[in-house]
Image (cartoon, rainbow, N blue to C red):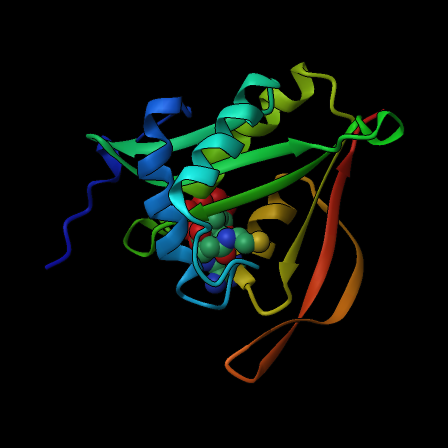
Length: 170
Ligand SMILES: CC(C)(COP(=O)(O)OP(=O)(O)OC[C@H]1O[C@@H](n2cnc3c(N)ncnc32)[C@H](O)[C@@H]1OP(=O)(O)O)[C@@H](O)C(=O)NCCC(=O)NCCS
């Protein structure tokens, strides 16, 4: 029997103290080798530095947490150049056993709400064309299709196309 612990899961801003647990979740999803551009997480120390710096810059980072464990994340990284600083890149992931229970919807809603407050006017992402659940989620929260990147990803001899999607707010 599989326990459904989703009612215990809280969606909250990621803290520096949670980065190691976030890193474990990122690594687990990356190692599935089909959803993320990472095939494993980068090493822990550079990840702590990178995410701490991103938090300090005010980028939106949210975690889905149960107890002390981060089981999902969603973040938006602002582009650096002044002429692109209205644009942010969205990433999201949930460890396998917590998927399909509405956490993705809750995470993305929280991160977008913060993005609009922080003056992003364009949020964009790439998603593998065969990732039906992710594409459905993005469409439901208002992302629009902008194009297709053919053979964007290759792992284990399998190529995947990626779809470019974005939300623009004037
Ligand atoms: C993609 C992901 C973040 C979605 O989060 P989730 O918690 O599993 O999804 P949710 O339960 O919030 O469901 C999202 C919506 O998609 C719908 N959906 C679920 N499975 C679906 C499928 N196979 N096809 C179409 N729609 C689907 C749901 O009905 C839901 O809509 P609703 O809110 O109107 O009911 C999550 O599955 C995940 O982390 N997957 C692996 C990593 C990944 O793909 N990351 C994104 C890379 S771009």
